[in-house]
Amino acid sequence: MAIGGFPSFVEDMKIFGRERLNGHYGVASFVLGNSFSSTPYLLLISLIPGAIAYYLTGLQKNIGHFLYFALGLFVCMMLVESLMMIVASIVPDFLMGIITGAGIQGIMMLNGGFFRLPNDLPKPVWKYPMYYFVFHRYLYQGFYKNEFEGLTFPNNQAKGPPIITGKEVLTSVWQVDMGHSKWIDLAILLGMLFFYRFLFWAIIKTTEKFKPIIKSFRFVSFKPCRQM
Image 1 (cartoon, rainbow, N blue to C red):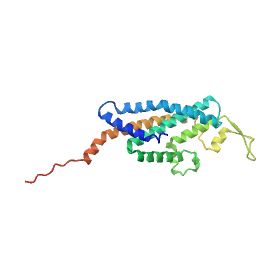
Image 2: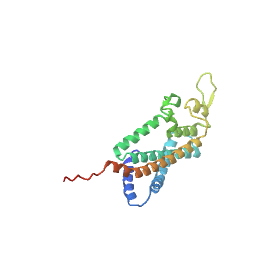
Image 3: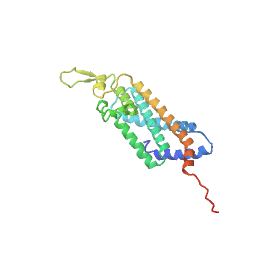
Image 4: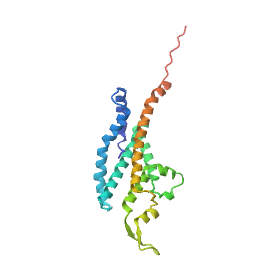
């Protein structure tokens, strides 16, 4: 959804550029205003469609589990929007920006540990370091822990215990890191959200500082020589 709204992000950047030249507000005000203006809508999207998807699929009916699911979905959408704003600040063309943003998202999804389990990922580049940098990893693992912890399932395998726990499913089937709780995964996502927004601010400030210098090198005007 955030990828589909990329053209509006490009327009926001153009409007900000004009208003910045007129001295209406600074970069920090733009980043904070952009963050706060989108928060209520993303929160509604994570609650209403999230409730429909959560309860129709038969997940745990506990309200605490649903709130964690909605909060994780909200932070994930904020992260995707932040990533697309970073792309918009670097790639001003909306078509190339959509292609770039979709490509980055696709690569991050492939390394999140869902399409291929963590131990099946190629270790150079794909697992080290990309698997530990993508936010999908922490979102998936938080959702897995939120759903499977505390549950028991009948074991259909021969020569095994009649009951297996959700923790055993997480470690043996989904290869989830159980060294920390689901709230740590959510805290990591929040930290990545603040880092993405800071990176967005830093890119705008850097572009604002060095763009005139680059233009001065590219468009040097030479005075015509007068023939005597």
